[in-house]
Image (cartoon, rainbow, N blue to C red; front, side, top):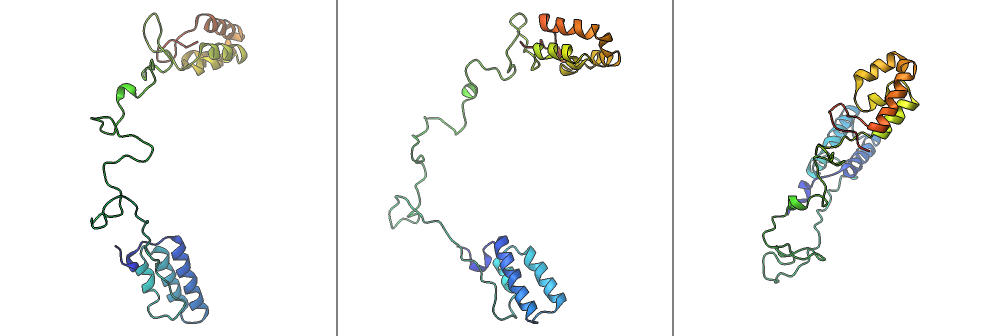
Length: 199
């Protein structure tokens, strides 16, 4: 068990010590330089012992070290046992049954994802090629091309080359973007990584 002066302190205890130093400074017991130095030490103190040392030559008010509090132990060990009052290792928490034999505490990778979910293809796979589908939607790309005829749909799917060309030509006077948007909506396309756009 920790000695009272070795207990770690928090901001509340530091503030209490600084308030006590303020009273001593106001009473004329500390000069301005010494007061500032002690306040600096109090702000950086980590234990009650460090704070108490700032008041060794001062009367009350003084810093009172906090009392170390320990949780009330409960359990089923016998009173004469050295670990009396503490739960016995090996028992599951209330409400949970014991783990199955051989369990190491980690989930089985086979059950880490829902059935049918492939982490390498979160949006599914192309039924013809078996390749993962893109995270970009062909409908969104086509609508962007039709509504904003400046290559925005192409920027959306990562095809920056065509996107810049359409931006500089105002979508080929609107005709290129219009046709491109219809093609994307009807036939789809691929994103910058060559994956087919999802529906």
